[in-house]
Amino acid sequence: MDDLASIYRERFANTGLEKRQRVWRILCNDFFSTMIKPTDTVLDLACGYGEFINNIKAGRKFAVDLNPDSPAHLAADVSFASASANDLFFIPDNTLDVAFTSNFLEHLPDKAACNAVLKEVLRKLKPGGRFIILGPNIRYAYKEYWDYYDHYLPLSHLSLSEGLLINGYELERVIDRFLPYTMNNSTPTHDLLIRAYLALPLAWKIMGKQFLVVARKRSAS
Image (cartoon, rainbow, N blue to C red; front, top):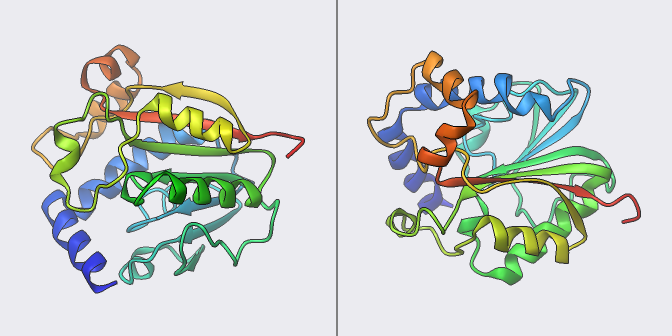
């Protein structure tokens, strides 16, 4: 736990929490809000410092992380639990309209652990509920991917899609190149630039190194 907290304090200090919150506010308002209704029940899996869950509009918000620093950064309307992603004991089955995770699955030790997470999220989703997954695409970030000490499980948009299908989901949307790999650099992040980037999918093909995969729980699950 202490190692986890210290790693992210150092990593996010380099990026700047204010910068991250500002970028995620635009991502939520201009992009992810098209997939999430203001009345939805939403889970942020491995929520970090709450960049997504604090900024998305939802009827009820859950967040889970093992980082002891996470709760201090979450808004008052977020229900937090310190728990593993494969044991969401605090959420009843068939409750969630949307589960979201960003840059998390690559931290799992192996495919068995990934399967356990996918199965647990599936249990908590309502039939037809969405699992929105953002993460580094090993096809396009195969060099930078290993620059982080806590990266273990390399995934592409294709391997993750196959894993989702195996575990009972149906695919809704698969984008192989969406966001750049990291904000931990000097790339400009002015609000207008972020909005322009989101509005120009051609730019994703040039700069994107993270996939975005959206899957649904089958109605018969």
